[in-house]
Length: 169
Image (cartoon, rainbow, N blue to C red; front, side, top):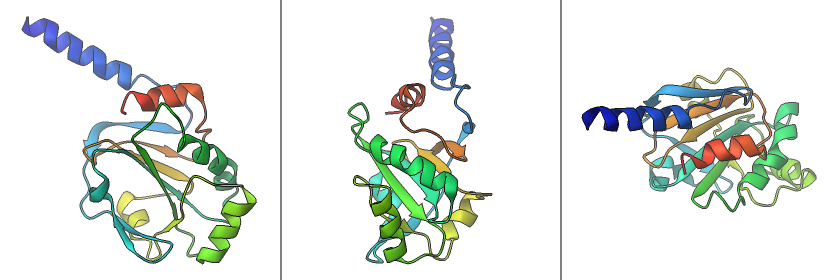
């Protein structure tokens, strides 16, 4: 019986981590825990990620001057309203040290309607996560642990990606 339980556990883990066809997706072999993950909303109010535990969280790091960010942002906007991901919360965090007005203009030009603008002005999160470029997207499970990240842009509307993400929902 113990063998059967171990087999089922290993099989379920391999299914959840089996997506390799999605470019730029890196699935963590071990979950990563971070302390004090906070950033600012458009009104300079501090947002702490621990307040959103119990949800599937996406942090997407971007800037208005980043062409790949511009390319992927509309699909990220669409992902926020995906019916199959009810407890998903997306925080697009501008790390370009840009004003709210410039960021809002960027969202308006791309017709972003389902996402709010957040900032990491001292770039503390970018350092904490060791970002090497943008866009970078980091995924957190319901316990607040990082389980994957995408380095570079992807199409967040890709069905294979959505099915993979649903396995963590």
